Amino acid sequence: MSEFWSDLTPWETELTNLKSAGGGWAINDSGGDALINAANELYDALSDLAFQADQLTEELPLGTTPAAQVYKPFIATVASDPVQGATTVLKKLQQEALEFRNEVQKAMDAYEATDRGSALDLKQAGPHS
Image (tube, rainbow, N blue to C red; front, side, top):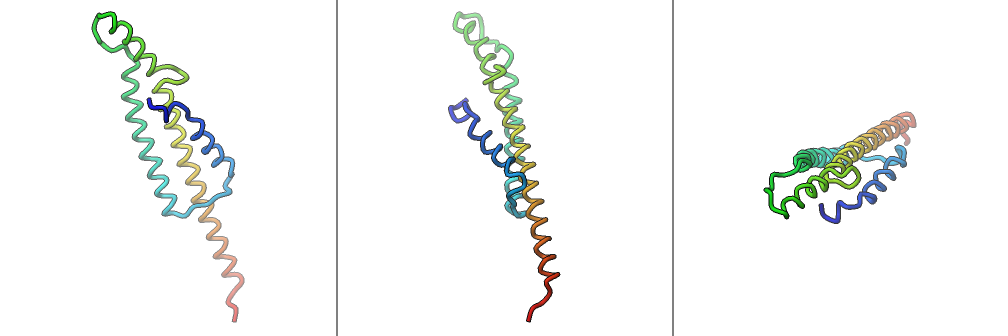
């Protein structure tokens, strides 16, 4: 995996900040739909990558040379390490994509509620001459 994926802390921090806003932000339908679609596409892409990475958790049939004997367990470990392995990281990112999508939906609901409340306030205020 590239260095970009080696530390998920920035992504986790932003997701935590988003959740801690506690409905303190709102987004309209068009912006929210775009973000939800992006989160869904990310989730699907990560699913494909996680499936491919799962296949690497088994030792590959690389042969019997001394180099092959070194690489076979190494490749499987890189994929399956419970802390930094490819499958672990990809599955965590998948979960965070779902959490992000849920937070965006909450923000869309907040926008809708605020919009309805404002419309009701205007209606109750009545026309002014």
